[in-house]
Structure formats: structure tokens, C-alpha cells
Image 1 (cartoon, chains in turn green, red):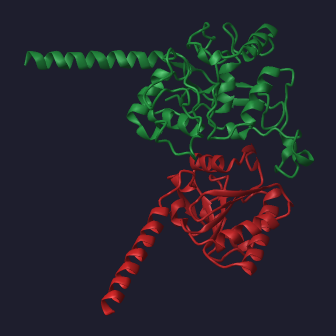
Image 2 (cartoon, rainbow over the protein chains, first blue to last red):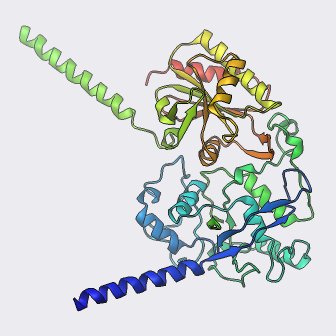
Length: 254
Length: 195
């Protein structure tokens, strides 16, 4: 009987610890309005509803737990149509993460895999507009996009090689208490395939490729850092598994 | 002599069974098959189907939305042209699938209406609508990009995709008013391929 109580106690305390860990891992963001780089109509404000966002990118450690319980997402089991060959390429086996990278963001994950992970947590991938909304904040401002220093530090991060090896919470969080939106890895968003950049290398100015192509344009080309992210997203396909591309999950606010 | 014939018949039937078995094994889904997508879809007739219900057919797929005034009528016209040319050159199991990128607005009734307006009422024409998630999944398997630019309008890539009888993507044709000859040849080849 005593033993049973002891087990109960252990169980409950571990649950509460787990719960507090989970709660601490998610930041709550109040909704708002902003003009994104690529809006529906150029210069138009869009509305973001209040949502929750994981404070860091999903780490190798966390992803390992996921593949333990979801064998269909192990490296040897995953269906090629949902993840290309480089999926979890750095892992030494199905359940062995790359040495020394427990706390660094999991990368080499496809969009389908990232989505399945978030679903398993009762969450989802953030929308593009949510991610950009969270990422335009600095440590002091909700919208620091006009801040040259802020943009410079983001660009410096893009230029630094192998930042995906760094551990999460490397730098102080932004004003939303969210870490590492810049500086470690690029991140999947749910609607990455909504980014359509036209008028470049493709034939005949893309008029043949897209309906209403003229409606899509950049509002703030000065924001070069954001432009790089949009260009990167437009080049992605959902089964890609790249070494500098990770993700984090989001949730609607109840 | 008779015994020999018996043995020969036995031998041949074993061979036959083996080759049958091979066909069964070959029918197991390839890793690249689109039929791994578990989603359910509604057709223009209001039926609920799985993509995998189309296994065994050559699939020709395109994504459209019914309130589209610009590219979609062209795309639909091109699907019709492809269908007409293929019909002259080959027969076999084939479905032409038009998937809505506007699942909220494109009800089965609206899909039905557009199928009638464009005279696409034969069994080979299938109009599908899913939900927001399954639509994005499907688009991503086809590398189709789209975004809502106003309550009624989407910007989207104009891609016609061809899948073999096992659901593997074998050909894509991108753009409007592009020559369809290669697409037609591909479809004809697939129809003539025995598994």
C-alpha cells in the first residue's frame, strides 16, 4: 500500500514537472496588425490573431522522443514521398541523434515530418504571417524592422556558417519571450508554398505560370533579411530535408 | 507420355501462379506513391473518396477554383484538349482529376455545376474538394504554389501532373498555353504499359 502511494506520488509529481516544462516552452503572443513584405495587396495591413509559439526550435532531443513513439517517422521507415533521402541524415541510426547536438535544433526534416511532429503535440506549424510577426520583434520592440542594428544582426546570422550546430536559447529572447527566430536555422511554416516570387529566372516573366501574378510584390525591399527568407521559402518543396532548416510549433489561443 | 504432359501442365501452372504472385507484389505501394496520402475527398457527386480508390488508373491532375476568371478556364480547356487527344490514341483506365484550391467555397454543387458548364460529365472527370489541410498536402506533393489574394481570388501555379497506375508522379507540364504534346505522349505510353 505504501509502495502504491509512493508510485502515485512519483507519477503525479513527474506529470506536474512535465507540465511545467511544457508550459515554459511555449510563449503566448498577443495578436496585432502589421504590413508584411509580401501581403495580399502591397502595403496592406494584415491581422494576426493571438497565438502560442514554442519558445525555441524543436531540438534533436525532443525529435528523438517523437520518432521513438512514431516509428513511421524514423529515418529507415519514412516514405520517400514525404521526406527526401537526406532526412535526418546526420543521425548515426534510427534512434541515435548526432553526437553533441541534443540541445541544438533538429534539421534535415521535411515539411510533412515537421507537421506530423506538431500534430503529435496537439499543435501545428505556425503560419507564415505568424512566424514573421513573431520574428519582427527585437528584445525591446514589437516591430524592430526599421531598426538598422536589428536587421544587421539578422543578416550577420545568415552569413555565419554552421549556425545549426549551436544550442537553442543561444541569445536572449525577444520581447515576446521567444528565442532563436534568427541566428540558428531557417524554419518551416505551414503555408510556405504560398510564397510566389515572380519575374526572375523563369521564362516569360512568369505570366504563364501564375494567375494574377501581378498582385504579388514586395512592399519593403529595403528589408533585405525578410526578402532572403521569402526567397528561400519560395524555393522549397515539402519533401526537402535541408541541413539548416528546422521548425517550431504553434497553437491557436483558447 | 501422358504423365509427361501432366508434369508439364503442373509446371506451367506453378509458373502462372508465380507470375500472378509477382503482380500482387508489384501492386504494393511504391514509396513515392501519392496514394500514401490518407486524406478523404468529396466529389462533384457528393461521394466521399480516398485518393487510393483511383489506384490502377492513370491520373492527370490539376488544381483550380471555380470562381477563377483568368487562368482556370484556360487550364480546364487544356485538360479537355489533352483528354480528347488521348482518347484518339489509346484506351484504358484513366481519370482526369480537378482538385479545388478553394475548399471553403467549392462545394460539391459548385463543382457539379462547373463540370456541366464545361461539358465534363463523363466518368473520367473527377472534381475533388478536401479541407484546408488536405488541399495544402496535395498541392505540396505536386509542388503547386497558391495563396489567397482576396476573398474570391487565388494566385496559383498552373501545373498539370501525370501519375502512373501506382500513383507515382511521372510528368509535369507547367504554364499556360504550353505545348501539350509531351504530356499526351506520356499519358498514352502509361496507358499502353501493362503492369
